[in-house]
Image 1 (cartoon, one colour):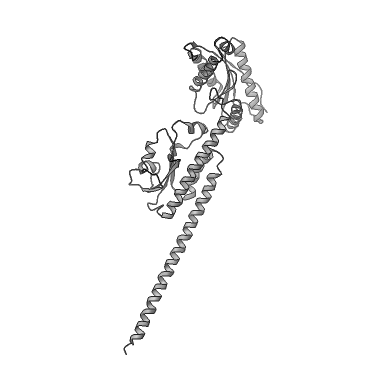
Image 2 (spheres, helix red, strand yellow):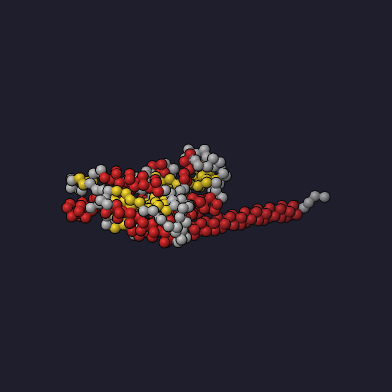
Length: 379
């Protein structure tokens, strides 16, 4: 029996409506899934932003970027390039800070500029992209990389690279927009941390020699004593004074005296390891900390500093050459030989011993190195 036309039209309409409702339901489910995914991405990025904003120092900020980002976003590697034309960032970072190949300080921004176009924006590249040789170089299994340009006042100040083993990672347009915002936050945090470090360093710098000042030395001494205690490695302290400095200033003028202090500071600093620390205390007196340096090695270094300074010609700023010699006193703490409990007391004893040895060098005619040993067990 044939179906009446009206009934056939009704069945077709019902089928079409059912199909339409099914499509809408499917789209709504997909939309809800996308919204949920975007919310999770946003929440993760917000937590990450808070970590960056809470960073208490430039070193802590870089530690988050290079050591926390990977776990936070399920990456297999990250790397960071920062534009540092004058070496300021390098000078502001702790001397013992190590991020290996993951952190590169660039004196020239050309290589970073090559990663982006005229208007740097967040971009995803795959391993076949020629730029990946730079962004994914440190991770063998990397299949894609996210390039986050760090821009302040129109200047590319850095490039942050996230590496994933998923070739399709970071493809969501919404995710890329979130990441563009994140790149701006990272650039702002970098600037803020750098400014904070710059202000802090100014309060710890001797304005004449640009070395650490008395306050900075006291802080560094306590830190190195604590480090030596933990590592059970020796620590040598030298107190250095320019001989007959008052005569130099009286005979040639205070400006010439300043030139002598600057020249001595530069000369001694140029002979040191990255982990060593030189500060100007007051007047013509300097302090030198040599972590991991035993007594015999310290004596060798002291003699080298003394002998090489003795024959150094110093321009007084007016065409005349001056010469200066040094009285050096040193003392070494070997934790295994002299166990100590009170680190504050130990710091003072080291300082007093090295100072008394320096005075002995000075009263003995100058231009010599004297040693003062810790003669008793420290408790």
